Image 1 (cartoon, rainbow, N blue to C red):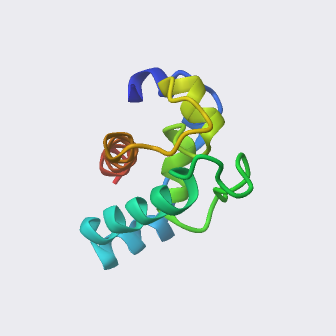
Image 2: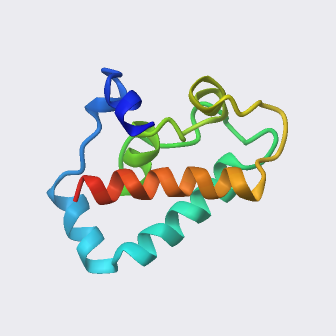
Amino acid sequence: MLKKLSRSRFRSSFKLDQKDLEYIERVGLDMIASHASDFVIKRLAPAEPRNDGKQTPLRGHPVFKAQHATATCCRSCLKKWYHIPKGTELSAKEIDMAVGIIMKWIKSNT
């Protein structure tokens, strides 16, 4: 999936900058994974997320950049790229998939 996403001009435009890399180094990948899980559960997993389509900032945390790069930023992107329907709460398996691809992208960009 990362290869397919990398062919998108928008998705491939996201990069981790020096500040992101320093933050990841300082807090560690386990904490980044914890943040990713928390963001997905709170902002993406509900059947009707608050501010869907605008709930993930474009910057401010490495996970936010990863979410845009991996199309795990909103329910519309999940539907388009992963065929996960809107209007239903994400399952544990779907949450794990989203966090997994976010972390795979972060690891491949550090």
